[in-house]
Image (tube, rainbow, N blue to C red):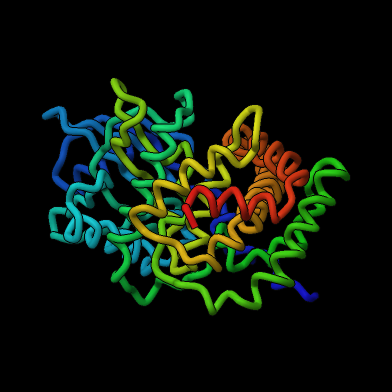
Length: 350
């Protein structure tokens, strides 16, 4: 089948992140928000992200978007956070800090290019990936994503259908990029997974339930209480939110839940059982979950290996999820669809 064009040369994945120093960030925040801060840069894939601390001790996250990012998309992300806060203020998501002029976004000129920037509240906690996985923790993660799904249920925005590479709806765009995958065996599995998605799931996509979803509920983006690793204290990074089938969002989260040994879908089943109790899934959604998990892992392998070759200086960060996805691709290739379907149906008690 024919593939969609590969990412354009003006996409955020083909454009380097802005270059800015901590001192420049401190000046920008002072000018735009009237706050005196000290800034520390984080490693980021396609934008600038900094942890800043005000002289009064308050902490924030400051983000400067890639020059290729559409300002309307940044507005979409900020409006989603505002909507979540208004619908369910108990959900631990970042809050948008308004500028001195009362806006959610400001504009920053760097190297003769204009970027959109915003200031967010800082969430405390330890990332999931730094902790030992427990059944209680996996169930809390499932419950948290379900609560987010409910909070975003009625949220709409003109930019909600914007195109991003990390969107399962556009999996076909990855076909020209699989040539960058190292290892013939792994590449062959990835290509089969992508082809299966394009031929059997994509044609039915409009039949699934759609809404705005987080789309990146991974162990780097979820924080836990440092004194209780079974309690979620924060959900970060709404940079990949998009309108998509709800089950695609569930699959993204499940794709990161791969036990080091034993039944490879056991962790995902724990997550799914808790999610389903709060936001019940339909039987036809559960039926395709296994294929979607495989597709997300194929996506992770393809995009990260392509990106790492393009930007070797940032390869350590880009490839941080690649080993897990590669292992998952290999282990799940030995699981039958019927076995996976039975596992997930049992988890949801249907």
